[in-house]
Image 1 (cartoon, rainbow, N blue to C red):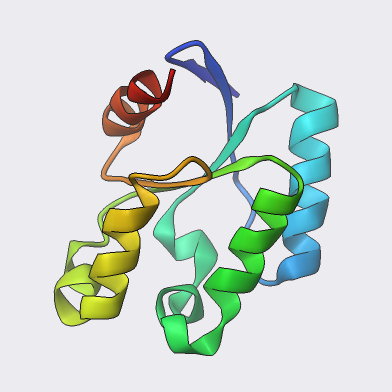
Image 2: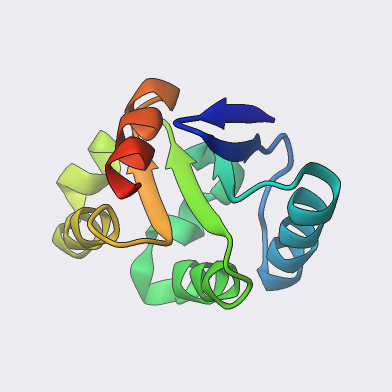
Length: 117
């Protein structure tokens, strides 16, 4: 658990493979750590998450929205973004929203969280 820009962020050490994993992690992070956001490395989300046509990213993101928990992807996804215009658009729009953030590192995530307050 880290405090970034006055926001409790649980940095997960668990892979997120499906919607039920998402719900369990959200419940654990909220009740055990009073977290407002959960941060994952791209590797913890798997390749399918970044293939938007699979629907996995949308399904998992929807769980975070439903349970009012922020989802942060922290790590370098520049190659994935460069290879997919839909992913690039989704990352850009997500970073303008309230529930999903993409950041290169925790410093960038801190900056993004500061701008939300």
